[in-house]
Amino acid sequence: MNSCKFVSESELPTKFGDFTISAFEEPNGKDHIALTIGDIHTQDAVMCRVHSECLTGDALHSLRCDCGPQLQAALKMLAQNKSGILLYLRQEGRGIGLVNKIRAYALQDQGHDTVEANELLGFPADLREYNICLDILQHFKISSVNLLTNNPKKVDALEEVGIKVVKRTALHEGANEKNKDYLDTKRDKMGHLR
Image 1 (cartoon, rainbow, N blue to C red):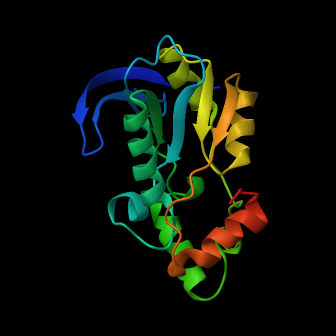
Image 2 (cartoon, rainbow, N blue to C red; image 1 turned 120 degrees about the vertical axis):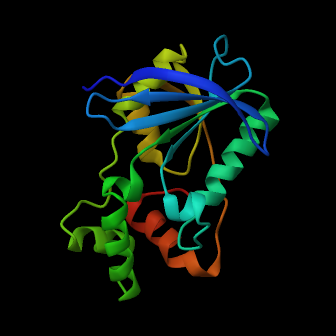
């Protein structure tokens, strides 16, 4: 298992609240961040969101997915809770990268769902890995979380690496007419809870 190393941190004021942003780097040079707020070092079941990078949804406000609204809802929940952590993992397009994600979009425009599009490009439905979560959470001395997710595979993945998921809190944000099929596919083919 590659180890993800802490590099640096600074204050990050946002419209949701004042966070601390911490940078981590894998040996292969891939970098990830964690946003923390409040006292997370002495708590059990720290409120936690594990969010995979989605440039189109997070930064460009695409309506094709629910990523941007989920990210914003998670940050708002952490700020309202006055405590928690968000891991922002650089795993664009469920791990296939930005360029291949755009190729997958083109296939979706032709009528394929997200799983079929990835498979037509020669990828599995989901290539994301969560081993790095252990290194990041251990840096903050977090061993148990309240995970903000609709994806039961994230719960399983964290527990497999040794993080106890005490609670799962649903994040139902960002549904719209343009992403209905996308959300149906996540539920029907990938087991997401809605």
